[in-house]
Picture 1 (cartoon, helix red, strand yellow):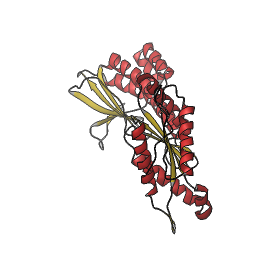
Picture 2 (picture 1 turned 90 degrees about the vertical axis):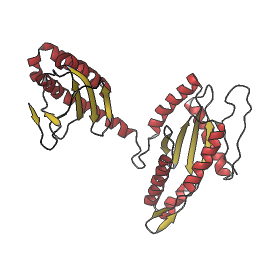
Picture 3 (picture 1 turned 135 degrees about the vertical axis):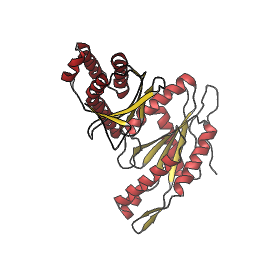
Length: 308
């Protein structure tokens, strides 16, 4: 059931097992497997797995790295005995690093990990499908659905902790003209380049989305009105420096940027509407980057900020 793989001398390989083989551990093992089936997320299933491994096999620590190389669980004390395990086959859910107190029951460990493999694989596949559904396939940015979910969480932080938040709406000027003159493949190249620039130059924690068509949204955490003005100027300069080559054509783009800072009582709709309207005003006057935030607290005057 357990074999050491020569190509990976520090990794032990376990055959995938099922409920029938778990019967050798008694009916509580089957009940545990049913519990594992009832929870759905990767983290929940790893938690149930660790509880049972600790109880049945003497495991004291568990680290799990999924197929994408992400650490999904790392818990328990460091021990003198830590071995890597994986499930046999090309569809292995990831690598397990098991720590124990020196008396681990290898047979039980093998049966439990082998039985959990299919359920972990299913949870990981579902998670990847959800992530994929929230990504724009052309640019790789998060899409509108993901934006709405993320910004609702950000607005909750604004309401509870008065955390500064700025929303930028970025629209490519005359994008239809680019498609008409150079073709839709050129338009796709422009969208990918702008998305890459927005993503690459964003701070850790900022959120970048493709909202629709030629429009992007950037959420800037911990950014107030003066910071929003600077960010809008920097973003426009960053994008308009791009020289995009498609086949024999050199394409330069201009963008309009609108900014709005979140304030008490904002909904996603009101915050986006202010930033969107600011973007349209900017489109009408490219020398101006308006900040349509209005007062952030009662009694403060509303104002716009002029670009240079």
